[in-house]
Image (cartoon, rainbow, N blue to C red; front, top):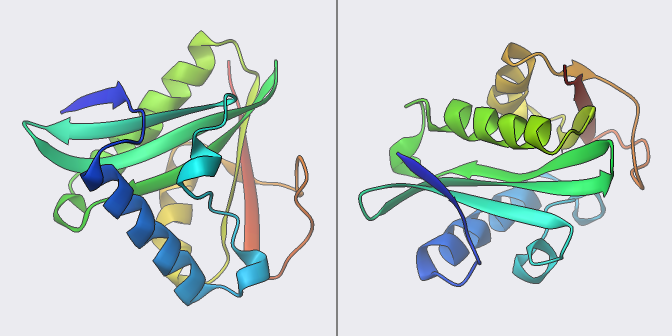
Length: 152
């Protein structure tokens, strides 16, 4: 599997992100959806990665710099074919390695509180993320869970 920086111009990646947004809006009220659209993911403070095996897209993840010490995990998603195959773990490890290389001290994320998001929360917990208060511009929301990890 190859994980690379992606410019968000490929149809496969755009399709996966559209699927991601559709699922977010199907499982949470609109005011509680914090997933970014394509244009939002092209912001200069965001680095977007896609994962491929041969020419098949397996997933994506982004890291957003909040400040020189703090980053946010965004838009983590695997394709249907890649679910439960370890791709999400590899993407998460890649983004944490990137954060360490950039010398961030903390990586935080927002995910849903509904059962639909339980597998994602389990993955984050497995990697050492703990539950925290809202960060950056987030506010308390019954549909959101906030998590963070302190990096070594």
